[in-house]
Image 1: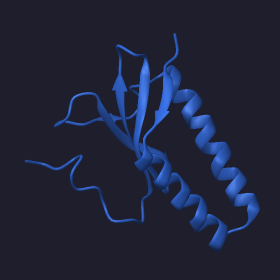
Image 2: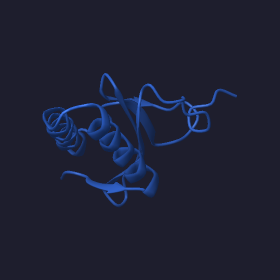
Image 3: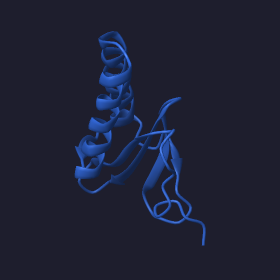
Image 4: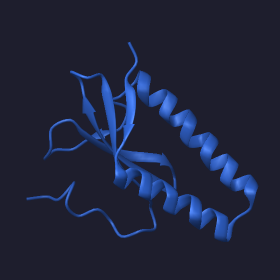
Length: 103
C-alpha cells in the first residue's frame, strides 16, 4: 500500500517561495515544468519512501534532491502510512543547520 503525503507549514512555505522565485525570474514554462517534476517525484516517493538519504541523527528523517536545484526533507510515519514533508528549499538558500547537524 502506498504512503500518503502530508505537508507541514514549513514545506508549504518553502514550495511557495520557490514558485515565487520562478515567477519573478523565469517563464511560465519553467514553473509548469517544476510543478510537473515535483509531482512526478512525489508519485515515486509514495511508492518508495526510503528513496533518499536517511539522517544519521534523527530516526525516520530523510533528505535529498528532488532535482538539481531543489532539496526535500521528510519524515516517514510508518504506523500512519504517511510521509510528512518537513521542508522544501532551493539549493542556493542557506543550508539547514538544525535537522542534519553533526554532533
